[in-house]
Image 1 (tube, rainbow, N blue to C red):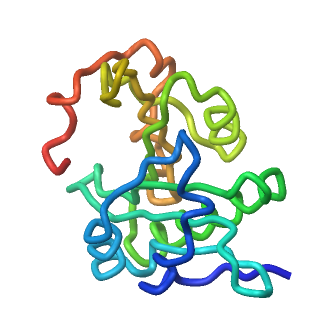
Image 2 (image 1 turned 180 degrees about the horizontal axis):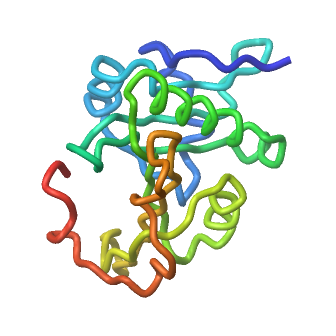
Amino acid sequence: MSQLRRFKATDLFSFNNVNLDVLTETYNISFYLQYLARWPDLFSVQTTAKGNVMGYVMGKAEGTGKNWHGHVTAITVGPEYRRLGLADGMMDLLEEVSEKTYNGWFVDLYVRVSNAVAIGMYRKFGYSVYRRVKNYYAGAVDEDAYDMRKPLKRDKKRETIRENGENVMVHPEELDSWR
């Protein structure tokens, strides 16, 4: 039996098994601690009965007005625990907190356009592409990202999403001012 609970600072010492995936963005310790201090209710970990880290989701609340939303900064599941529905449960919790605690309009995330598996999973969870961000990911080869969104109950008119977002291209410097 696994457990979904709030991330603790000590989890930083045991999450490397899930953080070493090439598609997982990794950050320095102070970045994780900043999220843990500021948005502890949007930072969760899934553990085995023995306490081993299976995956985690890290998010924040940001924006203004109708752009006030929950943001998924990172979600990852260790290779040996994939296809068990863990990401679904972690995303559900982040969406629930974004809606009920922060009264957000939507939840968003960024994903590499080449990551078809993740894009398919997010679509299954109810996310759609809002826009494509040119060269969002820097590296040996720069790569575009999809900004994917899922409206929350507050967005009754579904004003925070759009059709054919794949065709709306923006540059990173054009992203919203709170970023």
